Structure formats: C-alpha cells, structure tokens
Length: 284
Image 1 (cartoon, rainbow, N blue to C red):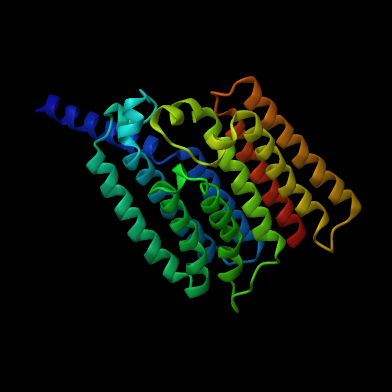
Image 2: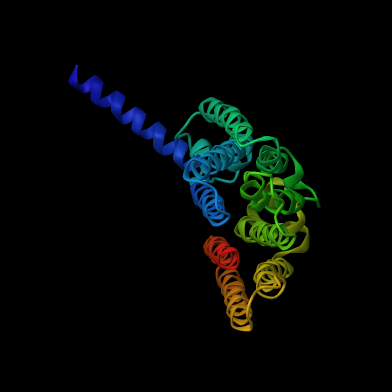
C-alpha cells in the first residue's frame, strides 16, 4: 500500500513538473509580474491588482501550454529534450486540457475587469494563440508580439474607474519590447526551425540581421520612455535611454557569442522590468 501511494505521489509530482516546464515559465512569470507592477503603478486597489495579474497569468499559461502541445511533433523530431511534451514527461492530452482550462479561466477573469480592460487582456491572449496556430511560420510572425504586448499596458489603465486610455507611448513601448522579445526568443532556435520548415520573420532575416532588429527594438523602447513623456527631467531621460541601450547591447552580444543560448531572451525580460520601472517612475 505504501509503495503504491508513493508511486502515485511521484507520478503527480512528475505531472506538476511537466506542466510547469511546458507553460514557458520564464516569460509567463515576467509578463505576469509586469502586468501586476503596472496595475500597482496606475493606482488600482489591491483586489483589482490581483485580478489583473490572475487574468494575465492564466492567459500566459494557456499560450505556453498550447504552444508546447501544437509544437510537440516538431519538437520531438528535433530532439528537444527540454520540452516536457516532446520528451514524454507529460502527455499531450494533459497539456491540451490544461491550456483549454487556462483559456476559459482567463476569459472569465478578464470579463470581471470590465469590457474595456477585458478587450485588452484578451487581445494579448488572442495574439499569442494566433502565433501558436500558424503566424509563427510566416513573415507576419512579429505581428502578434506587436499587437499583444502593445495591448498589455492598456489592461491596467482600462481597469481604472472611467476606463482611462494609456498615453500613446505606453503601448508603443510595449510593442517594441514585444517585437524585440520575439527575435530574442527565436534566435537560439533558428537551426531547429530551419529543419522543421518554420519560416517566421527572424528566420527569413537570418541571425545577423535578427540581432540588429532585436537590439534596435529593445533600445527604442527605452528611448521612447526616456524622451517622449513631457513631464520627465533630462537626468531621467539620459538614465532611461542609457540603461535601455546598454541592456540591448548586452543582449546583442550574448546572442552573437552564443546563438544557441537563451541568455539574450533572459536579458530581454530584465529590460522589460527595467522599462516598467521607468513607466512607474513617470506615473508616480
């Protein structure tokens, strides 16, 4: 009896680890954290902050799980042992069920924010699903990142009483960060994507041009935050722009030195948090 109980616990633990790995934990945590910080920064009460974070979290979970389920065959053919579905750590049906449940949860949670904030939150989710379902293999692969992450700052603003629309530079910054993140995320997988016939925009441009586009988008986001808002000081502008440019250059160097490493993508996530800090400083 004890042995069977222990075996059941081990299977549950393996399932939990598999689902955690299949949800793309780093970007899921980063995007959820960014959304929560934005919600705090615009002045939402704690209940609304938690609701925004929960809506974004479940949306990101649905995107991550659907991505690994849809790509399972390709990941398996290229020997992606880091992918729980492809490696057999978790069954495809389980990941599909988790993705569907998370999608239903994000629809319900988003609706509780009100129609305008829900529209922005679900735009982010729909963009991720559109990427997973086919846009990733086309020249328009960057569009879901531009649209989805452009909508992300609007979730917190539109959840305010009166449904305040964010200043235009907030979604522009989000879109640039998302576009840069797309390239940073794809660059380590260029060879595997070539083997499976995935021909998104980064694959078409190639590694060298992709690094340049990535760095320009990431640096551009911080420059926009540094110089566009009318209320900022020159010292703020210089710190914001210099920090973003330094981060973009660091990501580019990481991508060039080790193209197969996710280091550039991780640096991109740090740049996103840095830019959110800049945005919160403006709002304060």
